[in-house]
Length: 252
Image 1 (cartoon, rainbow, N blue to C red):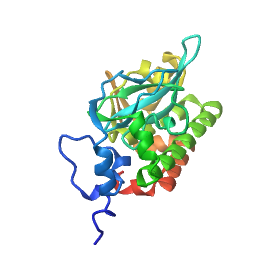
Image 2: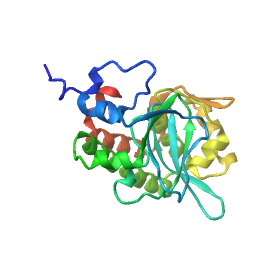
Image 3: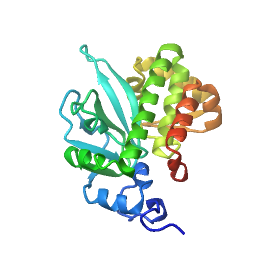
């Protein structure tokens, strides 16, 4: 029997009105309760901007559901996604590593409830304790960096169809559902391609029986088939997250 201080908060039934962030959920109970006192529950609505590109990061966010996109806006207005973060992660951890200016714009791509908001100053103070919280954030940051690097390789070497399958699979994992509430236009922005290209790719995936395109929603029918159609990048990123954050497995 674990003592309360060593026991993970995963063993504690969460409050019905409290968002569930998997990364925070791996903390020992004492650490979780201390961090919780610094958190504010905030709604996460579709299209909401959590961090503006080049703006000072005032708050660190822990999503409690749905999915958020880190996107880069170029000078000519073109936009592409850098990474996807759901309730397995944290947004804005760079403030501890000496960068309090947001390199990207973070928007809520799929809304599903609320999340936690933590003042940047409180975040850095908690990180300075070098405890369980610090340990989780550092390892998650490394896992996120591997996602960014793998996505860079994927965008340069793989077909739009493979990249689209990877994106759908990663987002399903973070949302925890086979139904994704998003349009082809939004998906084209995330992939950095033209909307007609996405429409053609999604049409082919639907003909293959892998997905069903509904109005404003994409439903994944055959997940295994989608994984087989995707490139190696999805499995690589997933395996790296599992290696760096093994505590997350019971929550997945």
